[in-house]
Image (cartoon, rainbow, N blue to C red; front, side, top):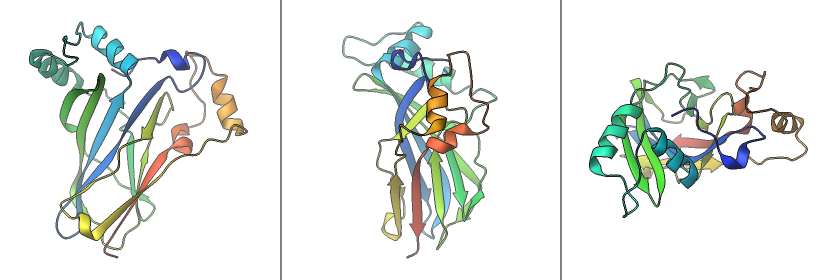
Length: 206
């Protein structure tokens, strides 16, 4: 699951490009219970991933139910070095998230979509807090882009989510250095993906 490559990125970092986003599960008192994360692979990566599991789409462009269930089961075995893609901070402090749960696998317009939950233990009050979710993978092998409008589930009237997209600068020396890396090389800078993250800012109680 985590070793796929994109034909458009053979000579540069990153190698896998994934659309998606993050939704917020809140209780009625502005308490964050979980994040729901969405990954949407492109059509090429979808076919590559399915072939690696000896699966293919039906004539209707979907997975058979047996294959969908089997793929969900296989992809639910997250690797020990799972990075998560959704990095939560509240008032500038990193917040640990529970291991992924509730994975759902679907084919949407020929693209593989994964959705899963990252719970908070215990749930976290958010009233008047500065909440940020950065959407990235630390080595920048995977490039995550927020293309899904974030939803605030259960208490949307009291909270506002704003997406701030990363704006690349072709003169950025770090981007130039990454572009020169081969497929076998990884960046030496720790947590390099954070430099290129799309971000969601959430405010509740105002």
